[in-house]
Amino acid sequence: MGLRKSNSDAYTPMLISIGPYHKRNHELSLMEKYKLLYLQRFLQRKEGLDVESCISALKKKKDEALKCYDDNLDNDIVDNFLEMLLLDGCFVVEFIREYYATEEKEEEDQEEDNDNIINLEWMKKQVCRDMVLLENQLPFFVLTMLHDMTKHHKEVSFLYMVRKTLLDTFPKAKFIPPLEIHNFNTERFNHLVHVIHMFCRPSDHHDGMKDKQNKNASTPKECCKITFCDNVLQLTKSKETPKVLGLWDCYHIPSVTELYDAGVRFIRIGYVQEKKEDKTTLFDIKFEKGIMKIPCFAIEDTMETFMRNLIAYEQHSSNKVDVYPYFSNYAHIMTQLIGSHRDVKFLRKKKIIFKDIGDDKQVASIFKKLSDGVEITNFYYIKDMQQIDSTL
Image 1 (cartoon, helix red, strand yellow):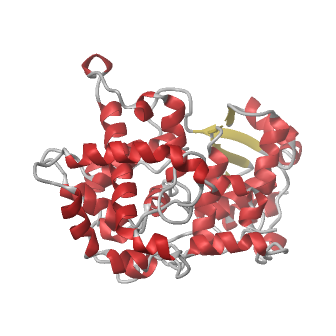
Image 2 (image 1 turned 45 degrees about the horizontal axis):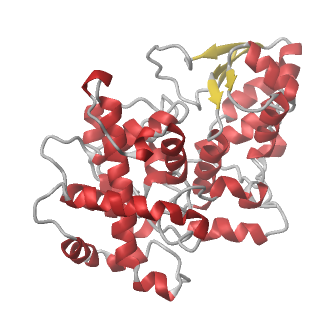
């Protein structure tokens, strides 16, 4: 059983298809009319802009964009590739623009808006969910190019809008000052999943994401290769779970209830429901002097999808220098800490877990399967696990 087979729904769009991999899914055809509406809105942003001029600009990037996908695309998708880039790309850019605008405006200043996607909370949430799927991506250079074609001189950067919309809906991304975000080199990013991954780091992580030359980073043409989406699909055919590396055997830790019975204290760090500034991230788990500190987080209906797609990106990215496996490591340690519903109940009482879905058994089941087929490398929590091992 591979990554995708453990929960195929977590990798499959439910409302909208972006890019070529799910283009033939007729259940997603309802959203095509919204793509056309968003295209019209996009063209109205700049006088004289039309479909022909956009296609002409995208044509210069066609070969580079095609290289981002596997070589087995259907002929009709290749023939209509530029139209797909324009239609899907404009939808993504305009959705993020509109979402950002509504979040920034005060309620009393908001004008009447007939945008059903933005106004309907369930629809907006579902689109955000589908936009972070590994199999539902466009090259990031296509999105930034379309944004720049219609950018107003007072408009914030596209990367900043992504940070304020998509990332604010997910658990505990790393806090980065707005000025730093505006200075990032966007050519470094492959697609939206890569952007999200780069923002989701431990709070003590420093990797120099600003606009300076990184000699070890791959070029967009090399690491934007979204063919690892195909690798995720291929895992469905695998009958065996890939063997997890030796750290699994060397450093096994007890569950939270077992640790508590052994005298370990648990402390929640960070905030979820309180309206306070929180610079902790999901990965800031620490063990020291018999105390386990765990960032609190909310279990929502999109969390498993979010986690699984970031794990899949780490597991199948060809860019091992830039893509550190924090999500894979987090899944590994949480799978051990949460062994049953009793562990979930304990963490709830400590106000470390807040859940909006299911019962404690369902939450435990999510974490139990989260690391199925995950290969552990560059283990971030090795010192913590060693300290736990020496303490017990």
